[in-house]
Image (cartoon, rainbow, N blue to C red; front, side, top):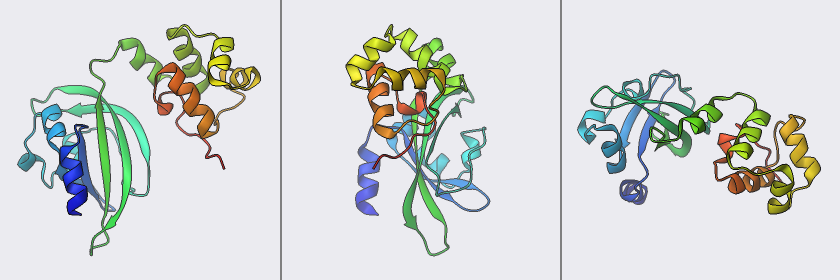
Length: 190
């Protein structure tokens, strides 16, 4: 894993490498960007439970890939809003433990309206809210993404809950948000 560790350390995206067992998620390694964000030093995080940083429930299943809005408890015990991406790695050790990479994005400086939109449960409502925030009509979105007006209307009305990946990526790019900010899941196209 030395090449991975080198890349992991030089990237400026706050990340932690975690060891996942049936019972717990513990921090295996953190990068410099994460230490700057959290205020912790590497040695303070080594082998600590992820509960030290995140008090909301994260599943102890290393096969999952998910994103989540949560709060990160910093070294000074203040909480900041973060967007978490949990990505399983195909690396296992001799004890049958798995590893995952957790990437953090600081959302504490985000516009409160952005956080309010993300908190909305219904994807159709989130799409409508992002379109309103960006001042983009259904016709404009259809024209700029080359997605049919009918498909966009079905997405806005909730008739399509899980769009295909390409459709979701085109719309999210035009609205300048992550796909997960609108849809928690998308279909893989073939």
